[in-house]
Image (cartoon, rainbow, N blue to C red; front, side, top):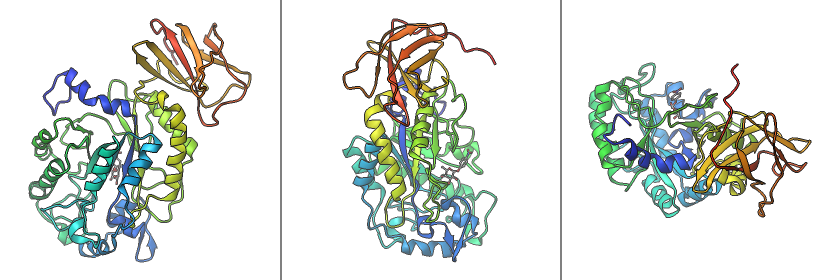
Length: 428
Ligand code: JFZ
């Protein structure tokens, strides 16, 4: 049971259901830092792009000037949602306000927002939420509740660098953070996720100021970064996939496609489509979700290398999505040739064998499996032609074609007869 919410286990399972089935989401880091794009006064600033104000110690007044160049005239939320959907993503989480304090929405409690501080002058979240709803995409807001480098009293990791940042943190929480979260929870209809971040100086007392707001969104799911020891609904391993997953917990790996969350013009260190697909599979095989980031430009464009990769992921998902959505962790650990996901349906248990290293001899051995196999077929085969299966010493051997159907990850489906029976993993 989530301790911040009074509900039964059954109610919690119901609330978490769509999220557990979704498996794959899009993270969007977007704000004034995209104007700088990793460069300040002609110098490339090392580190993640959305931290440039902090890294380069840019004074508040000076940083705010960059908002005048934040004019995302090419922003097409419909296109973003359709891209995410094509990629097989089932939810989007966007930075409503990052550590620089800049709100992507029309906030009445500050002028440091897209409506008052930029030539664009329009709320960026509203049309994205609307497009998401139109296309059955779940939508969540990232909100930096503690760190705020532009509002007085907002925290800054390692301390402030400009007098204008000085102030009372409790006052900041009461007058900026809490009212803004209330705006987010009131003005955009049902919101599916709240994604808190970096609870710098968040005491229990401060964190609790946000809890009553959650009643405004009774179905909302929240991460574990509010602070004050409040666990939330899911863990958030960042930029790495836990070896064994996080058994017994809900969790979501957030990850960049290159080396930055917020746009940097010169970061070309893109992960390959193969890596991204195998990450998604690896995470699903351990029972987690994958929140994959894009960092749009100040013009409002998702960088082309991200678009290309999302389209390629989508091509794979259009064939293999069934082996990802609504699956749970592998019951046979990590087989030597790849990964395994599992799905329980009305007509029994299915195992999805994700084969990264296709057997050149056409013999795929599934370790530890003791159940009888009712049917085996390639997920990419529209006819579901049965493959030969034999019980063998190590487990089950499936006869597969010599050629891998997919160079990145081919999936063999096993329909298990009756109960799933698996030998315990060997120690050591
Ligand atoms: C935070 C942000 O500071 C960063 O800009 C980005 O938004 C990212 C998604 O989240 O960075 C963190 C937060 C938590 C950890 C590491 C970096 N962590 O728990 O290891």
